[in-house]
Image (cartoon, rainbow, N blue to C red; front, side, top):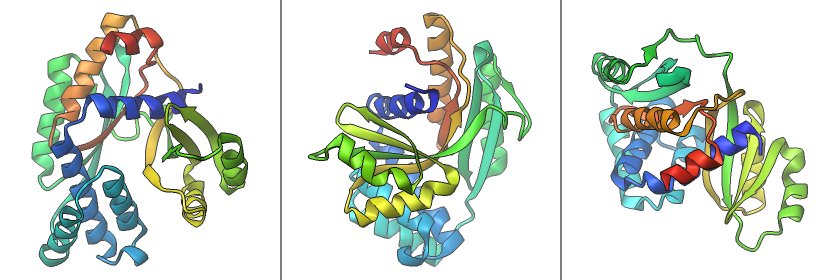
Length: 246
């Protein structure tokens, strides 16, 4: 399995381990709010909002929560802004952090504090652009779909990689093909469990188990920050590392 497919799979597995539903819902609410601020409350005319609502459904977020988030953003505006951080966790593992915040100074302070406490280094924006590629990643429940037939039907929409992982398909696309693959899945009536643009590492760093666990503890600390939406890294998650987390 290639690096970015493995990354997508581990993200999903970790989601089950890291199942802090309140945190998941909070992230989706923020994404809905920034989408409304950016493109208005009409999901039909706002692709980013439509995607956020789709992911809310995949996370089993109640419709009332979604509607409240849209109404709040529509009526109150809001001053959320997107900020990103790049740097290195312990043992030289690259990390890319995406945040949505209403207080940039607070977010910078909290992120820098984790880097410092854990022995990492906060870098400058753009310093890791050579390590991470933007990719579209779709998670689709397998259900009754035949893997071979399904793959043949969607491959021309711009699919780069198609993986079967347990009860789901992981579909990876180039960033520019994200919309066409999403449209094709919609046309086929396929329910998407999750869809997002991820920062996928084009090379990974393998560490001994204890060193890898130290990095993962650092990543978990970043994920616990309220302003953090997503964090990506290039740690090679070997079978031995995965087994040590179970």
